[in-house]
Image 1: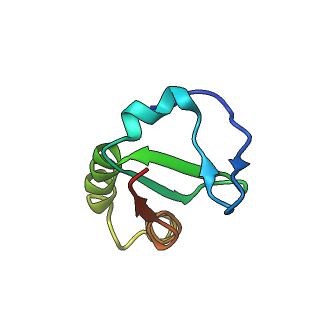
Image 2 (image 1 turned 90 degrees about the vertical axis):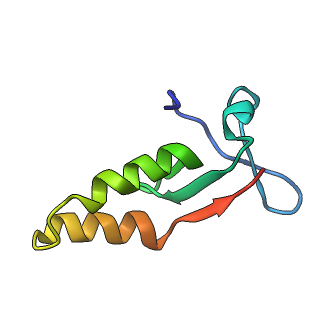
Length: 81
C-alpha cells in the first residue's frame, strides 16, 4: 500500500513519473486504474491480483458490486516501468 497524496508529474512524452520511493516496489509491474473522485489508483501487480480475487467473490447480483468492478477493471492498464 502506498500512503499519501501525490500530484502527478508528466515527462515530455506525457508519461507519468512515479515517485522515486515507490519505484522498487513497482519494478516487477504495476496496474493503473481509475479511482474515485478523479484519482488514479496505482497497485503493484501482485496486490492488484489479490484485489481482483477478493472482488470476484462479491455477488454479481448486487448492482453496487458490479458497478465498482466495472469502474475498477474497465479502466485498468498493466504496465512495466
